[in-house]
Length: 253
Image 1 (tube, rainbow, N blue to C red):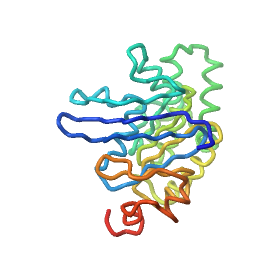
Image 2: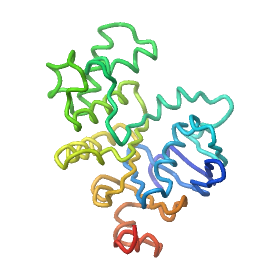
Image 3: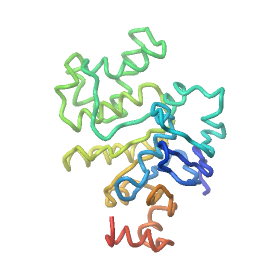
């Protein structure tokens, strides 16, 4: 892969108790590109991306072996700081989950936690983050209003702005459009294309057309294993593995 690699996994395995949910995954994820993970429900896609920012640490029955490196550093090393890892590798969830606070306070929340107190600096971060999430023009006169009054699509872009406010390098998106209508979905897809100019974006999606539209690289997962990973055009037009072809052509899924 000619691009700069930002996340590398090697023989990554994850267990929930006795269940081996991610099996021997080895992959390289490039910076400033969109990588999509596709595959049937329950195949380990969301579990895999939750490994990248150590969200699975919060599950008591979870055990991980193998390696994940971010910029060449093992994120599961004893001296690695999970809070700092989650700041650098942010996450946007399937269902928009704004805080029951104002639009402004949703975006300012992360910077405040990380020690930003200056009002002028917070104002700058909020505006920049909302602009980068393609939401500023829609909410600039509603910053003091509750985020709960925004539409679903606006709430999801607000959650993206909230992630951007703490200056991540990687944005994980777990089915970010599954709860949205086609117009809101289109806006998120345009935004994803814009975000890759500055960030590595990794998206889990059941929607193969979406993966084909927005991603540069695609990984196909099946029953915990990464069956095939490569350039999106190659995966969709000339898959190397019969299992990938069967899934893409709708023979199962």
